[in-house]
Length: 301
Image (cartoon, rainbow, N blue to C red):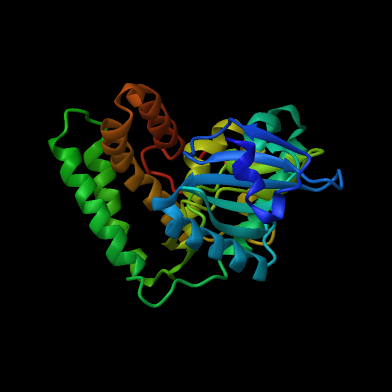
């Protein structure tokens, strides 16, 4: 990106240094901006103007997160420059937990999980706007679409009928569930650690509204594979270091069961070459739950 564009953004026009960040799946261009006072770093994202309205919503979400004291980037400025949009936030010092956490002791991993769970709890104070339809109606409709697509696709998961029966027996439980803010991508890859401690949560652009327990899916699919102590810690931290009740495990299992079919269809559609990798993950959590003969996974001790 040209220095002239950066010079046109008033807040950072006199910055000291600009370093591009290459990591991540986002189509945004990301830069660390070093300001003149030496120790102040900001994060700049540049993006196409057609997504500016979406980015403004994300910016608003970050503003709301400040109201709940969530440890995440603070929004500083958003706007357009030349033919590009930009967003500036504070920069969270550290590295992503997915890369780092396996170097830490089990106790350190567990404590990072505890802190992550507490942050997630804070986010879930933010209720969905009135125009968002109920979690139950949106989730059931999505699920039916995935099942229909699954039944006509060429891939078949072992014991699929048993998994569908488990879903049908428990799907009514979603009717009573609250409609709250969901980060919707809460896993080790979006958690920053620094000096073996939790430092913050990033990437709010996939947010959604619905049952907060749905957030824990990512533990069963991703986090538990990298760090079981973290995964247990996140659940304990969320529930204020108490054991979650049976309703939690039943809903958690329901969402994982639904995920079997959405994962197959999503993978076939978007990254068909990764099908075997994704199926390995599916079979990992199906084994964890003994194909839903058990609600609490085997790794949760």
